[in-house]
Length: 231
Figure 1: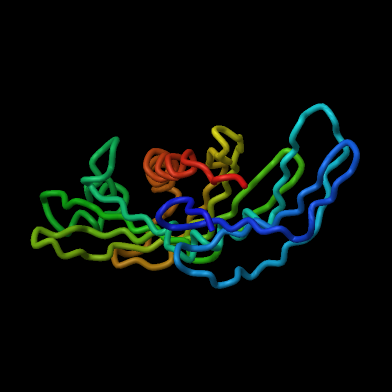
Figure 2: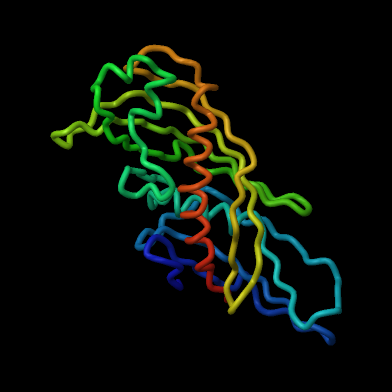
């Protein structure tokens, strides 16, 4: 296996002997991504497929859903979809209870002085990969826990939200690596648990969407830009 990064590695193995024809050679490879140091077989089956006959280029390379499904499974297993955002790591603005107190009155009761806020995001299921003609989408089901960070450095859970994210990925090949760029298409939030009373989720959607767009997506794209080594 070849390392992709510190979380995953990829194994390319021949499914069958190379098929040699007069104008071309067919190599049937099975590409499987594993969490680093974990060779547990992914819960997917690699389905055979063919590449349409073309002759304008020297090399044609095709990937099936299986390759990307095993990638999703490997990174989910390795915890790559678990992200913590704090005041120190937030690039564009300070996340504090002040942001939420105008929308959720109970939050304002914690302190006259705003407390820093910590967000813990995690995928609750293996992200679902879907390859269609001219589209590559990833559906992510997850949760977001929102904590107030108290002066003694302990945390107090304010509320937990369910998140459903629809994303798309654009692929390209550069420097013998398969690279991707993630785009957030749609977000849905629902309140799972609250220690600060009931409130309208819709009032927080713009704030939370902005945090995901400015913190999570750029972080994911930085990792995707490192690329998957090709066989």
